Amino acid sequence: MPLLRGFRGLVELALCTLAQSQPRVVGILLLLTVYVGIRARKVSLATGAAVAFALLMIQA
Image 1 (tube, rainbow, N blue to C red):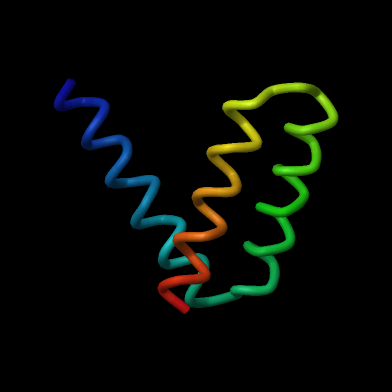
Image 2: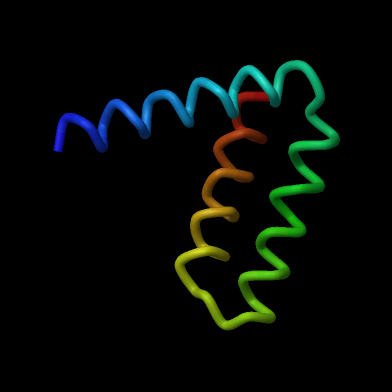
């Protein structure tokens, strides 16, 4: 469980750093991931990308 939290924290930090440097690219990639997740019927992929997109837009 601590390993999962640590990994999650690192991913969050990487996304935040990337979003601050190039927000357009990250937004486009996340929206593309949502689209691919919906087309592939992978609900968890689409939901995760949508949540990440929403969190990054809230921080912007």
